[in-house]
Length: 527
Ligand code: FRU
Image (cartoon, rainbow, N blue to C red; front, side, top):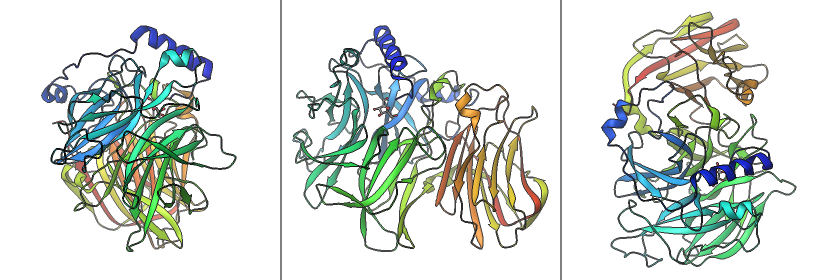
């Protein structure tokens, strides 16, 4: 939720509640996809990232794979471009690249509005809400009651379920909701995400409860028993949107458990960000193996990242997506018709590097199908500046560079995007301080938010290698950077007043040696 002072926040909530209420609304039709595609050319509209056709979106919710389709629900307010009483918007994709918008999945009701959560395919019909031949899909979500919140009841967030027996299109709320009441009266008690725990043959639910995650288990997704808490001693930051799942360590048979949590404060570059812990989960408790919490992305714009349920074993990937914005400014970014995009869907991999576990993430390989004309460049030695030219649009392209670090003498080098009104976006590598800096402070001369433009952001980079691989996806108003196959990621949004139409490599006080480069023009997913 937005980072406002509590008094401001509750006043806004109250006003929104009075204006829009929190009542069940009849299903409404979305425009057919071709109407949407015609209008997907507005200023700042991403061309290969998921955005709602119109209005407000935040966290990804209820993601599952079923019968050839990856479903995505999302926090959605259909009546405005700012946050309000939440619904679950709905879209699906067959290839993780092209999306079809679907009618809203879940509407507010008499218990409350629909905050974040997950969904699972109940293949064994443990809930008895479907059959084994037609398994029900169960969504777990938080019911948020604005009236209770205003009355300072402190139990205004409760966990509920809804089920679908038609593959995720029509949803029925369970008539015994809430399934996890808020008996302890915890003010921030939300975002339930469920996983099947094979060893105990039970479902396990992870829930954010202010500064910790609470785990519950259930044989049937309806009756939940509290298991344990996971917290960091002395940490009183707000935790949101947990996700718990097992992962194989690459190249081994070892299985570890990953606990993802999004954090509202003290992220690497201010604002909100997604973090993770690696450890073991014995069916009752999570035990962390790594010294410190790690960040899934060093950029400011990858929040509430969670994974898809029920990816077939034959595929075996761990796939997820994040909300490409930040509560510091999400509600005032200068898009007019809609607000927010999702990150590209990503594949996560777990590595053990020198006895330390790390998650690497990369865009799913399916994005290769968007590649159009390719510009392949031979070895290049850049002194000062080299403009990159070819049949590509600098902000609708994928760039891949292999930097020969041993032959690079410049301490500082990178890539700069600019337009002819003096606005620019720079990715800079500084060998001496071991950092990649991402500078969006001059991406628009008309600064819509202080927080957005305030600081140059940074991520740690290990320059002590022969080469460094840089993969960069530019999509109109965003950049997603993947260093060394996803070892370090950086997601950022920006809003230039005119498109960046010039891109150049640069090297300061020395040379930059690039052994291989490829630039792919990327097609729009909406055409
Ligand atoms: C995270 C979050 C969740 C909450 C939702 C409300 O961005 O604050 O904790 O369920 O947004 O829209």
